View 1 (cartoon, helix red, strand yellow):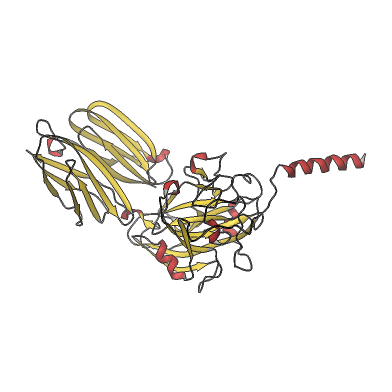
View 2 (cartoon, rainbow, N blue to C red):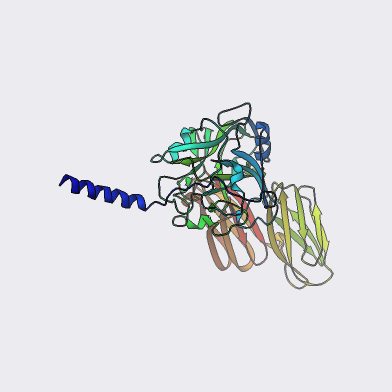
Length: 452
């Protein structure tokens, strides 16, 4: 009887084990690195990390890599650049960190098990990354740490892509490679962030790891790179994700950013951080303008916030580029008609665009003096606003609410109204920054708000 029981248990164990694909790490991937469109070079200077990451409105100091504050040891961090179409990857330049050597990320994807030996001994382990996957074992990590001080802004943000060779065959196994982005410092409303992870699946509290973003779960954030991915070696990767957090200007925060192997030292995973993407969000542009029409002459009053320069397209084939903040521009239209006026607001590597339609000749145009007014007031409840709209005639109105990544979170349509009073309650959304855009038949209104 004992022998039979032992045999049955052994068969069950073998069946369970057989469900997990055999681990066969490939240490000898042969790619023509010199001709691939993804270029990666090692970073050997700690100061370069801060210079690559820090965007407008922030200062970065006291940089460490894997606990070392004087030098970078190994091949687990580098600078990357895409030399052709970015496509679904969404990030063209920045910093890459890998649980193996960073060169293992370079495509084409001609192996499902690339394992690039890291030159760092002993393997670095991080307790914060381990806390994100408590039922797994973190075995090898690449971690940068730094202090960060927002100068004037209340929102910080960073854009990243996470990719791995563990995809897709090792989803929901012990090989749950993970990425974390931790903040420590004062909360704006009181209290303290203590190693709080900001790298989560959008609209959830799930950390970014193999088991939480893949072809089975949260699929809208996952891109398969098999077969025959040309740029990247990893078998799968996330869409570009922007994390954000409300902070207090002038206060110093500590950040830790890391990626790690789980379960063993095989099958590379990596994270790509966009260059200059660690920024104070109030420095990002929000394009907007008003127009006053007098005959065929139009004055465009630029009310954009936080831009460095502006590109106008007046809709009749004429354009203008302005490098002075909030400068009004004038334009004369040779012919009557309706024109789509486009304003691009540029700030470093970010662009925000607004399009408004004007009528030259026989009808009213975009002219707030004719009775189109908008105001957004704080409501009685926290994180709630009262949007009041008064129009010169009954019109259809579209109210769009988008998050910091530009993703629509809510849309409200109001038909054939002249006077509108609409409550905007942000409490149903996660904390962060939101953009409210109002579009009518004649003009647009844009406002940035913070859900604390």
